[in-house]
Image 1 (tube, rainbow, N blue to C red):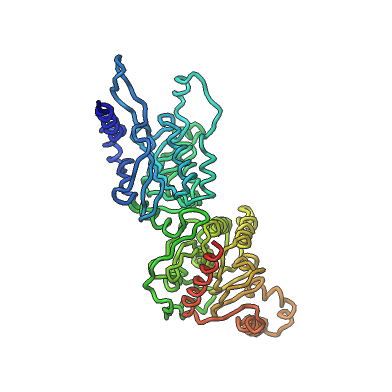
Image 2: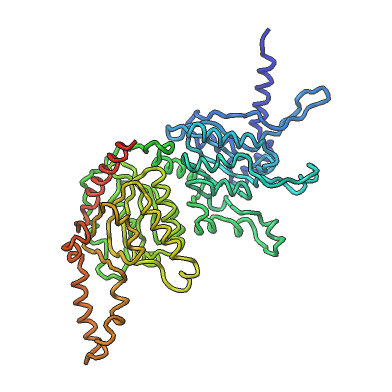
Length: 508
């Protein structure tokens, strides 16, 4: 007696599962420039580490004798894998099976995937390529009834966002539930020209009188610039690399601490280019990204959300191997002024850093909230205050470096002023309740009207005020803690990172 017959059937069913939607549909997937689901799982996981769960689940068809004839596999695959040596849960939609439609799926596979993440507290990578979860209109006639909308297992999706790092890679057209699963993540990526995201696709939208195609309705040009999705990459392989890099800065779950990396970049490195980085002319801009390269460990900066909320740079980086979260002004966009989208981006990123206990470094050149009619119409002050509140609520250590401007409420959001200020300022620092340039004529109106030469007198007033606004006057009164040589920024921030992580480890 043996179980060979059953093992043979298991092997047969496993082979059928590996055929996915069949040779023709797999070929069609490849002809669109897309990997199939199983190739994606192999490419994302460390070599040989993926162990699939529920591989033979699907919808079988049987002959009159009850013998298996064929199986339509479930269009959702998941399992345990290693990514960069760390255990994760990995899932992939199979577009070759009815376009990844939810009605072709076995819902328990998807809910068990999220439950596994929740129960074992493992990071999750979703590779999403599907049309959603509700099925087709035609399916309603087949069912004989409709149903009240519900998403089984969504409570685990929500809990996972509060428990572990969640990455979502959009690798094809995604609508409805697929789109929701992308957004319900800490980091999301679209592949340019390959991925689209929408609540409903062009055929449905056409009923509203709007004509569009998938790319014009929901391509990466739209969603990586409105903040729905974090980043746009040129290929699927680049998406996999982005997922690996994102996870490398974070712990495996809430309550754990991120890992320190080996660092070959000297802590005492002083970049001479920082001396002349900030122009003396306040109207000229400079590259804040160049400052990041000079200050943080070489090659360690990983920027998120570059295409939206562009007045702020949000990134992960390392200081002497320690991971930190970075918020930095970008004076090349709106002069660094926070408009609504920038403030929303800062709020989300600060909350992410605080959630996963990463110290924050804030490089400040903020002339204030954006002003004007559009700024008012887009509720800039509300989003700005929300960003400020996130900084004040953060429990992780924070260091700020005033590179140039810090004005108004937005400038005050550099840190929690009620805490110890681990803060440095460059000699180029310029701060106050509002920029002097915009207020001299108003503040000194009567004096200028009485002057014999108003233009010359204006310059005299400006010279007087420039002496008062010297950062050394503020330091004299301990209004700012330390003015530093810009070349000392890296050594001082490495010192901060060491002390911050000492505090985090003692509290763990």
